[in-house]
Image (cartoon, rainbow, N blue to C red; front, side):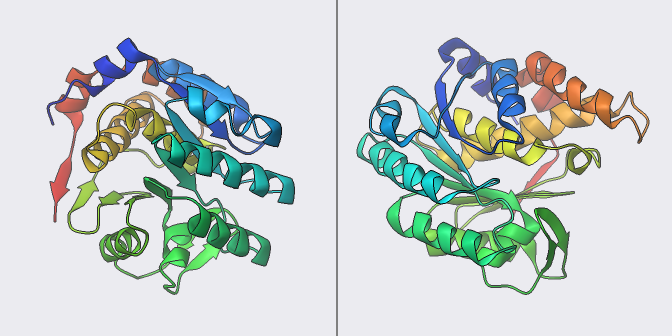
Length: 264
């Protein structure tokens, strides 16, 4: 997979506005810095008109949702849409509670998203497909994830990315299947949240949202895969730190060498 997206990302260092959850804010900020972007973390409604106007992408994450935060997300999302700024939704644990479900439906109604990225359980919920999710974890199910990604992309007119042992990315027509990564991703807090932010950073580079999302997910998966090669399965703390180092080191040549992608 040939591209120069990582090189461009580091040259441009886009400013990424994150309305994210308190559990992962620090890790997401450091991860964006590692890959070459510039983070700003704010959910103050008083700033939500101005920040999207100066940032190159907005990433909305519902991990530790509050009513005040939902209002800020809506205001920021509308401002981003007005400024033609890419907007990413990470519907963390959307199926876990009524509040999360209703909030995500409100966000999807009020904001035009360029990308929805989540785990299998989260995206299956948006597709109204039976899936046994476990809180914010992916859970288990037997549905066709490729078709789920395609269906949700069509429904919401955006790119959809499902992260897991295999990543699926769809624009509603094409589906990319990415067979890179590591079993250590779900063993640390914030790996999916950081991926959503990385995708937001990539979406600032051109108008081809599908290609950019595929590249973002692939680069991120490979960064984790490379770290895992030198670790025991129990070294989750080392993986947590090592992922930041790997994101800082990975380049387009490494991605091309490791990428294992097929298209449907």
